[in-house]
Length: 223
Image (cartoon, one colour):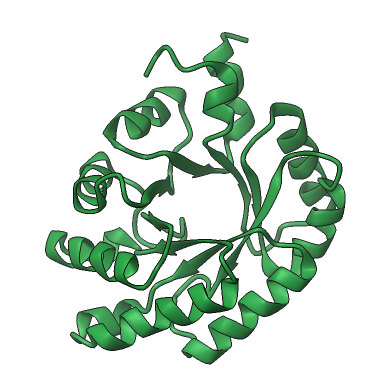
């Protein structure tokens, strides 16, 4: 993995700004940084999608937003409506939070249907399912991955970054082992140094969500 070029690593990053007090100035800086480094996406609050889409319009950077964030407890039709609005505002990718309580209750049909409702509303745009792995057992993580695949999602993702813990190497390895090469795996939550970033890639992540993207790239380049 050390042979990956700077550009290849940048293309794996969702440059993220999801904190509740994020300002317009911070959003604009996020977008400009993403264009400069050629990150895969900017991942922003639904309220900020339209402005982000306009800001990165003349680049290859895509706009990602979150659905049912951060708890995943919105009703499925509400999540679907969030997707419809996000697409109208210019979103290209959707990171949805799975209904965690329903999974723990064993309501597997509901969990799968909830994901499927978002996938359908996304109209073939990329859907990443946030599992919130810190709240799940290993068996529940594997089951959530399987349900995400059955429902048509393109990625499984570790964390919102707003729960009790973020991504771990153990959970990323488990997710990759469960989905094989059929789905992507996104690691997010607490990835702030280049060593940990590279370990996540080696563990099987092919997308990383972080707010420390610029520092990671500069560290990687030895700046």
